[in-house]
Length: 111
Image (cartoon, rainbow, N blue to C red; front, side):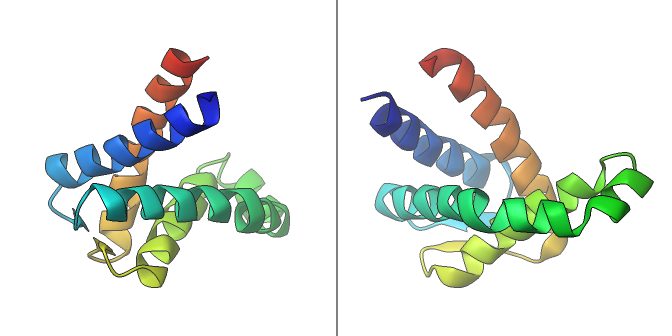
């Protein structure tokens, strides 16, 4: 039940990102639910591989490169979906930062 609640709140957070920042567009709540699912799956499958492959760069930048990886996952999700659009890498970086901050709040509420 918590997983479904977290998924719905993540979709709402994605809509909030689109409302707060013009560089991210979401067609509706259904598109936000699919986008939240795809972002979650990318973070589950692809992100760990990228983190391991970029350990030297991450250490050199004192962990700041992880923001780039998060932005790439956010941007990749927009490339895979039609109802979710991000206007370039800079928009993906700022959008992923807002989405991550809202995700932290969601985690605190759900758990």
